Length: 245
Image (cartoon, rainbow, N blue to C red; front, side, top):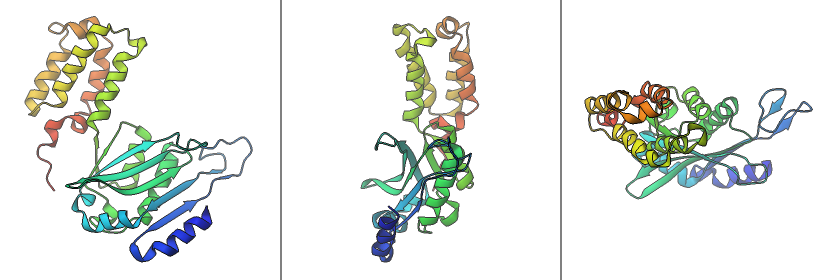
């Protein structure tokens, strides 16, 4: 694989294509594939294709707002793959790819630092994009903050609502099937509130146990609401109205 990466770099350097590989190395018996401690050097493959390099150079959005999404189960080693992309009038455009041997914060911080090295210095350069939109993976978000400290992180609305829906369907929460849809509808009203005052009103309505039967019936909802309320600037669209590029 190192030979393939070297050949790739030789053939694509003039077009901006660049890749970096750090081979997996287990220096200690008993260490696991995705553990960066105990003498394990994690696998990291960072790639910027000529198309991605051209996008960084020509697509303004590459320096403004990007998405980071992960997938796994693509090979027998279950290596996580992180794709950095942006939106344009032509649709989604990839900006970079990282394949690693794990999803811990330490591994991802190392992986993103290598990706940063292979990306062209266009747009905001070392500062990275103005905004990152991700799911709620704490390891991923912490690694992005460490690599691009000048970027602002937001939560993907789809993943945020999906996490609520999964939580509502968790059998441990004991929420009746007929109550799940009305509760998620109330959460959506907060997400899509047009103003901060409307968001505040929807939150107070949902958390008022005297006025809302769901938080009275299911008190376990309150701690979750309060936890996410502290992070409302990350998921509420009313806080994105003044975002300018």
